[in-house]
Length: 306
Image (cartoon, rainbow, N blue to C red):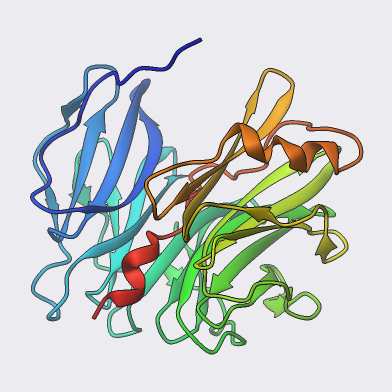
């Protein structure tokens, strides 16, 4: 079946850094974060914006760009979490378009990536920062859980979440060229860093293949690594993109798991990444992106941000 462009969502005044989806009052919506320092909500059924731009990142620093957004459900209500160059993390009620309380925190450093999951029955956000820190937030109580997770030595550009042996984990990729896996309940790194990338890691996504949790991570050099999160080893040969990898997402099409990769030359590699299925025993068993995950990595040219 041929694909076609359904609509173009216009409203942001500058480039869009990030995108996530949610359901609000039974309608599918998209949430976007932009270089214009705003967050917008879009009704995907008609392609129209829902209300005006959400303003709250500008004015706190010289850079209010919104680099990352994710969605979750908190106390039965759909929310978005956004952050970027303004050194704060905002939470928005997607039904009303208003702030949910004060920013989660101020002055903790620029937030480059965010994903959400559920930990001990409570919605949490996992954020990656320019100082190399990974932080976990209780979205209901609006507080940080524990201390910063330390290990990365450069910007954390990618975050995804998964469940491994019944435990919630985060997968993070950094400009330090490593991928790390974190046990979110115990607040510790699981094993050694996953080594294999030779350039900055800007994208991460997770899935379940043959009953096993798998992570896909992409780097600025155009390489996509496939990891078995249960063993910490590669699950397939690296996949080669045409150029720097800025985004990775997974989906199930029919009975096959597809990994979609966005690269810096304007192309994406969907069907080519089915080879990961053929090299992973058991075949696909659905996808493992948590509710509200931001499955994509950050745009590769963010390397040049100030």
